[in-house]
Amino acid sequence: MFGIKAKQFFQISNLLSLSRLFGALPLVYFLLNPEILGKPIVLVLIFLISFTDYFDGYFARKLNQVSELGKILDPLADKVLVISIAIAFFSTGILDLTLFLIIVLRDVLIILPGVFLSKRMGEVPASDQIGKWTFTFIGIYLILLFIDVDRSSLPMKIYYYSLILLIIVSYLNYVNRALKVLRKTK
Image 1: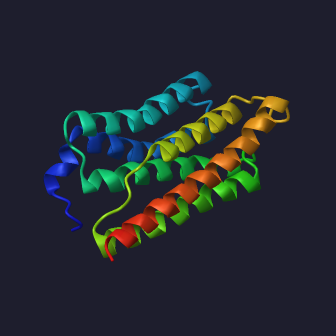
Image 2 (image 1 turned 30 degrees about the horizontal axis):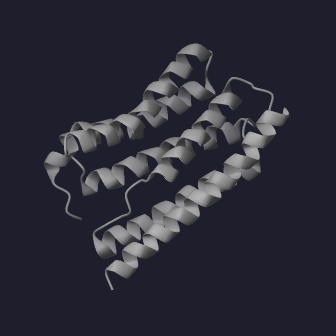
C-alpha cells in the first residue's frame, strides 16, 4: 500500500510520530482537566509531545529513514494533535470561533488532498519548514491561551492576526506543492 513496508512502523522516526498521534487523546483529557496533574505538568506533557515533531524529522534524516509512511504519519500526527487541542479549547471557550475554524479548515483541506495524492500518485508532499513553523506557532498560541495570557493585550492581538496570516500562507504553500506533484506526474 503506497510503498509502505511493515518494518517502517518500527523506525524511530515513525514511532515518534505515532507517539504524537496517540498522545493527543490523553493530552486533550488533561487539558480539559488540568487540575488532575496541575498546569505545570500538563505543560511538560505538551512540550514532550510537541518535541517529537522535531525529533521525528531529525531521526528520519539522520538515520536515513525517510519513508512514505513517515510522510503520511508526521503531518497526520500534527493535524490530529492540533485539531484535538483546538476542539478542546473551542468547547471550553478558550479558543474563539474564527481561529478554530481557520485551524481546522486548513488541516482538513490539507489532509483530504493528501489522501487523494497518496492514492492517485503514491506520493504526498512532505512536511516543509512553513508547515513546521505554522504547527509551532499554533502550538505556542494555544499554550499561551492555556496559561491564561491576556488575549486582549496588543502583543497577543498582533500574534493572533499574524498567526491567521501564517496559517493561510502555509495552506497556500501546501496547495502549490501539491499542484507540483500533480504536474510532475502528467
